Image: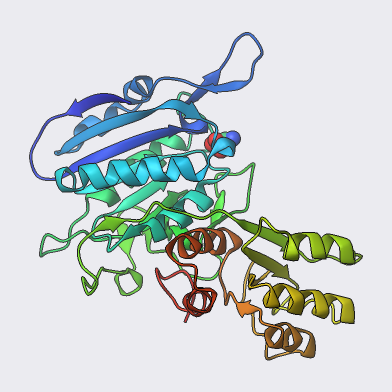
Length: 352
Ligand code: ASP
């Protein structure tokens, strides 16, 4: 990591953490592919940052990655850096590739416990050096949001959030929905936390604040990644379902179901779910639909899953369910406790 102090001044202080992604990429003249370049060059590209009347420091991760290579090790590195620098800065802006940004934001929302400062992830669809880039606006607004305080001097958005294309969204509610346009992210089941127009309008009633009941800011990085995702589809075979649900390396499975949480009602399917439950596997039901929630009481097919031991993921995204499972499995061996926590709202990730 290379420290780079951009501007020394008073009032707020922001730490930008550059992990890679399109925002800081440029074309390699040899093969014309986009490859990451040094963060110092990003700073040169955004002189507007110098107009903020506060200190903005930056750290560049080594290596810089395309976020398709993001792993829990990256989240741990980010969490540890935020923990180390927590008292020195008022907010953190993480520059990250868009492909897995929702996964990283979701996992970080659980790993950063009792968070009292903004952690805003952003990136872009076009590299920051390109004239029509969306990267500048995303970066400048993210810095402004990360430094925003209320009249009592408290952070306006002490959450892990994603800022993209004028919208600030709770990170664990987002999903990447567009690989071509600037509106790459959606928060399908929750309105944005803020909207950037001429002014930045905060949706204050939706923003979460730490209640301090369980102590001060801390991080949990001991994730357990023994989780699989089973996407139900017509024609899915018993062998595939068995391999995923009952595989020895899997402690938990996210079952991506149809509509309001429905899956095949065939006997072999329900029997395999029951068998997995008997083996102690944790199964959480998340809908394949972009909007709406799982309700296993609505149809007999959903009810059968519930009876067989599947837990409702409510209106969780798959990205969020994955981060939550990594976090909960890392915290405990007690399947019953994990199932209870899965149905509980821990970081605003479900509407309950
Ligand atoms: N492949 C890139 C990444 O996720 C795409 C992007 O940044 O938009 O790192």
